[in-house]
Image 1 (cartoon, rainbow, N blue to C red):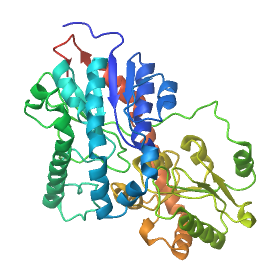
Image 2 (image 1 turned 45 degrees about the vertical axis):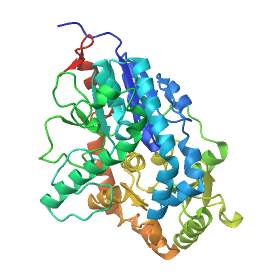
Image 3 (image 1 turned 135 degrees about the vertical axis):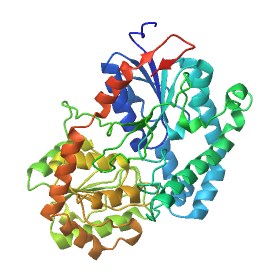
Length: 436
């Protein structure tokens, strides 16, 4: 059997906001430490983060931060009509991105491709190159199970038959949603499109099932007993704290000037009315008397805090969660997979205020394991309800649940363990690809 290359070339493809990119950059950093040559292909605006991790960036022509600030896309987050309109308006752009991902993958000629399900088209390049393309999931959406319904549509748990069926339905919807994006690939990838099998399942040149990496903690989602053998539970891929990071002086002074504050921030999730959401948060904090750090992020909150409250409510644009969360008492967030895991990583209770997608699922899981009070959807936010939920975060049982989750997370493979697993796979000379 041929010797594996000493410095395998690995392409990581992912699309979306920071929460869809940062865990893959953490994996890229771990792979680079293990000696791999790593390329990360994603949207614009992440080049510095990727290069700091020791990888090379190959951006596609879309900036999700700018896109999420557009009125039509913001409307798509909150209404069905908005979703349909935004999908139609961005379809041509999505097709162009699909073509660019395919072209980048062929140009890089990697030994191995890892992809987020939003970047599924790279499976076509893997078929042509004769290399593995392994799917990765930040949510349990690819592998059917009777343990819980697919975590995308806030579906009820009506038993194992319904749960399993919901996963198959979601898989079908993914295939349907992918079809319009393949129009521009009908000619350049004609042969690869004719190969049987779902692109979303990846590609293994040996003909075996491609390994499917489940990038979330068993503290939140224990591995179901009906998952197939090719499922790999690896825990979340965290970015390691930067020992050289120095916070702004005003933030450092605020943190040092009293008990640990509550963190309130909704990351890359914009809100219908940032000023109104900020007003509700400030009014609730006034009622509870708690100190807080408000993070405006990509537009979920504004910096409109009355001067009289600035001594207790400090506003920031952003700060690394790995720095800030250990210095906070609790975390109020939207329920993105990354923020949910980061809060639990440091043993911090969470109040989750979900908006859409997988966020209600993570919100329910946080509450189910005792790491936070009942979720409070953003659509139902009111100052009184938020104040009551903020007080519930101080229940010692929430802290105990979060700390128990932190112990589990600490023992999982994470980015470094996953990188070691990938480097141990035998990457053979093309066209044989990778053997398991």
